Length: 506
Image (cartoon, rainbow, N blue to C red):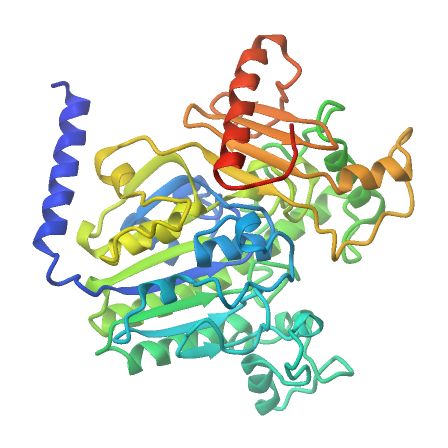
């Protein structure tokens, strides 16, 4: 047995013994699930960013399983959230686009646990339908978003304010919308103590204090660092600290997908929210503010985790931290999500599991959120759910067993997005612009580090993430990769067949 094999075997044995030794104590572990919206993976130290101020997330990472290469099911809010909550692919649960409601008949993790002794609560952004109304069996529901009213199901009160809206009302703030709503921009411009993260922090701490003697499942979803990209900590990082993405100046050559090149040109010509993105210093300030939003959330994460410790609950609570997708934030000079580049599809994923002790364990395999629910069910001693396409990552963690390849889907937002009315690139018609805008995409990321993205109405992509982690060279037209592309194309079509995905990519 060589040194590497000895370390692997010893680590697995030690962790396994720890789990067995603590099985009685963790018979009904608590779950504290903290997630953000639109947070890139590289926003904390363990993912390569030593400049951003996130001491509480960095501390959590030092005590947790760190999935170094974790991917969402689809890089936009509703579809990704549907997978995080249900363990199903968007094309299976029906949430293939933003603002499509999750069926009440499809259970979320807390319903799968199905234990009346647990107290459960959902706090923060939901974005899976009927935003402010309690659903899916949660005992408590704290809402913060009022801008999804038009998507409520029939019979819902569209004039009712979210819990956060009522909080602002009680503080005496006048709504900035004629219909009585407070906009996201209004909330982001408030003092720190009145912003959404602090509001959620206080409600989460109250829940923990009231349920310290009960097993519980608490979900807290922060809106930040989602747009609007500003807040009370805009200048918290000096511009000297703020770094541009390595691939900021990548030109996006003609072999890259046409829609992505059009997206970049739209930003160049029209900017975003009055920001002139032709100017590099504007990008610099935008990234600075994005980092400030991450730090703002970090403060509240620290307060919540501190309460968990002070109440003596940490040793029997699984803590999860992740995000629903990333943000390009200047990579390839793109902004927001919805593309298949790493900065959009890769997210932080930390899990502090009491049975494993307080030490960092980095998992370098390429893993998917599709395995998040099965993994939590496993660590909560609920076994495996045969109705779920994913599987527990416990063997990957404990035995270094290689996981399956990671798959990602993209379904165009046909119900929400308006067609483009003009051309943005020379020689590209309006008709072609809208054709590629509405392209379906399917991707596989193999454990060897190759990423293949296939599109039905746009260019395909192939990257060697080991040699080209910032995706500056598309290899899809290189003849030496022809056989590899055929093999990986079959992986995608086989996955589609296994999961009943009827999208015709090939």
